[in-house]
Length: 116
Length: 114
Image 1: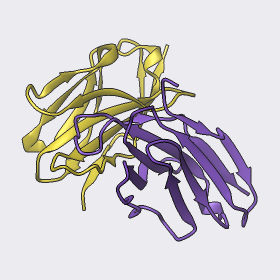
Image 2: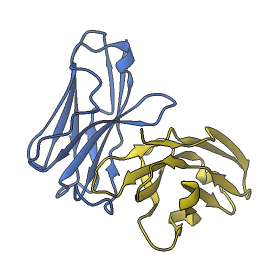
Image 3: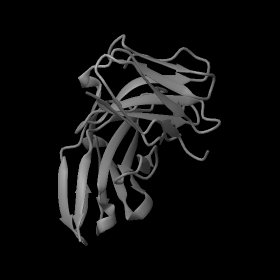
């Protein structure tokens, strides 16, 4: 596809359930980011993947959060035992390269997660 | 810690009014600067970016931003807004020292009244 895609677009779940969010980056983009956007707040960095390098997981808020990426393609963000404070929009972005700031990030439409 | 401040959280303007949205950052080194826009129901997209050279950069849809290094600012401007500019605007900073981290501001919601 031409852009970054994410699925599902909306997810409503009950507290304590696990959820899996998916991101398909732009083909050929080596860098991939996950962000969390809570209502009225800015984008909060969660995790960064660059090629086959070890990901930067420094932004993951707790050990309930994990993410994987298969090579330079699809990434999944998993939240285990969801809590109400996990409710947010989860955004994925990809970038052509990982080392140069010249390349911009391209964002997906996000997944709106609501934990009841 | 590095941070980006967008002091205007909500702005309401009439069509044809001039716009200036503030963005200040805290980082002492060289930076790459971005403004992203999110129109209602759409995903974030790049409005403009600054890496080097002329500190006045022009973006899409008549927007421009000026990098003032001494003030650590990168304010967004448009001389005459349109109803279609109603959106949320985010300023972002990327330290140019090879890091991949982007620091985003909290965003400014702009509403333009027809």
